[in-house]
Image (cartoon, rainbow, N blue to C red; front, side):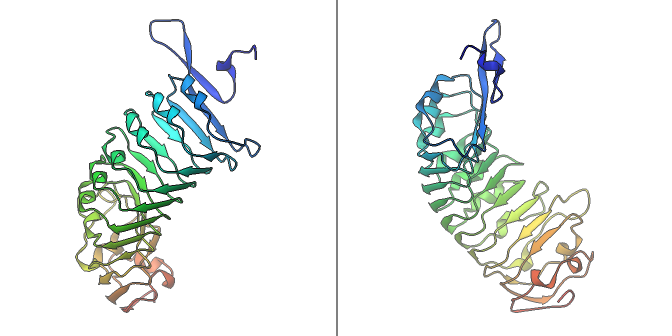
Length: 286
């Protein structure tokens, strides 16, 4: 083509400092059902790329190419809602400027690489809806406050590493896996950033009675708390009724007992199905 590629709809360009040269720094292709094949190695010919988006491409298949490792300026990579296969490649560890990585809704297999927790600028990681196996890496305890990590609907197993208790996540979702053991350390009075916590549909077992969280309009950002379909026991702590913004709540199919807290009144706003199939929970709205 004879047109300037910087004028194409799917790209944008940025001027190289102290020059008159412009280079492609943004590439997005999405929603193209007629795009068939693999991610081309020629992607490496865009060395100034900062944003790479290939998503909603059901006929984009094959592994993630090593060519992406030759794009050191990448800050945002979204390769989601495709049909990519193979493992999460080790060469992503070279992308030290990466802040957001979305690989969700593919057919990826193998373990979650530990290096993902050591990328110092990474604060958004979406790996949900794949076929990933093995444990959650202990290195995920190195994520910064406000990070968003979603791992739901894979085949992850083993305990959640206690190192994650040191992180003030904004979003942490690991539903629909085979995780076991304690998760109480993901709560705490210091978790002022936490907005979404979804641990549902696992094999977790811990005493919910002893769990604490910040409450009140100024201290709590909690909007979503999903714990259903586990083996969690104890009582519902009183603070759960005092979280003003909580709109999605479910503790059904556990081993909980005792009265549903009425302090604050917010738990009474939820449907009885949010509390059903426990050992001996009682009170409104049941």
